[in-house]
Image 1 (tube, rainbow, N blue to C red):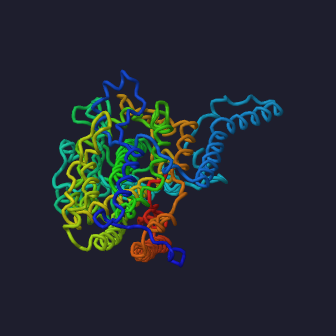
Image 2 (image 1 turned 90 degrees about the vertical axis):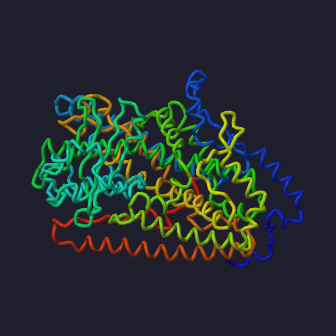
Length: 627
């Protein structure tokens, strides 16, 4: 750790051991004035607000006003602004200028050759082929993974082979376990009710059921479901898709997608075409269903997985920490690096993304009202014990044995490293004594405000349900581990793959042009007809590049002022944590390198390939929700 901390002796103490308790209390009073909870109205008009009171009350509360302590450093602001301007200017150029320049050049050439110029609409139209070409030749943007897969597997092209069709299907399944929303998939014990009327239709010539019935596959624990019915908000006009998946040749593959369409009482089921089906309407229909399902999952991702239950949820936790734990408290020093710059980015999100006419209104299918409603509805059923613990989530979903679930493998090993670090740290400062936890007035006040009922005027707490009592060191360790995991691992896995997934809309669109709530939402002639416009696409590219900036430190590499606030024992625990993370990094790199080597060695073009998963390499995991 070096010698820069040897002369620093910070006060790290529990309330009972602090010789300057009066100063401690006075500082806490100041913190309570600076950090106050608020049930955000998110700029709804007064008349809207009255009808939205229940929605607002069930949203996770957030910081009322940003104190100066939470403002980003000047250097950080400059770096952020430079990146923002570069990406914004790039996208504005391609949104509004480049196609006009191309049109002018074409007009001049046509004039000189005495030819009739083509209609101007041709130049403003944005096609899948044009997107692929743009990413391949861009000097400024990397080609997103979704575009690479689409291009390499020749999706929706006449020369696409059967193995390429299957590989594209595997990518669709891979997105359910290693994409931006990875915690929905669960094993089924019986045929889901939505699929019961269609069992024979699904089983007939299915390419991935290995000539077995769906029931046999279920008995072999091979069938999994991703249920997106929650996003319909129980409104019949909104689609609520459900997808089934199976394990085929040790890879997750799609079985069928069910849609609750207006035109059919039982809905509709779509499945991958049988082996040997080539380019045509039948295959294009399946490709379109994949695009539609991904677009609808994107609404769940940005609402619940990302905004609601990382940014908003942890914002309230941080406020409660500042209000109830002295900056001398060892748990304050443990948690504070994981809230670094979070309140600042959340304030910016409220102004730019969630505000009326902001990003959510501009490029998301559900728009901000429905997305906030979705977060609110989910928070009604959310409990800490059921939803917050990632090991429990994998177990209750029966998802421990899905092949290629690399997010699960990496998340569990990182969670264990965090748990070990938190356990050693916490046990040391509480002297492995449960009574010291029970008698810690500050930690008990912290818990009380986390569980206190929310109030519309902001005078309540976070209203967390299913929250454990702090009556043992272990119960405290479990909660602190979860908080740190959400701020670091969960948010990084949710946030940083966004450019790879969203930047190429056919892979994972934020919205589509043939809106799914319409009775005829398919465009069977050209997939180009359903993708977002040039302006919408570049708006998405700009925001995703900004949201995936890494301007703060990776997990365990705390900024100096956090380390200086710890005593030598605390810093020793951090050093041990850092060593564990280096070991994890090596393991993840080794696995991904092995996958790449296996893919190179595949000489038979019919063998399906696995994809490496990089996002939970500790270098790619930030300490906090700082972007």
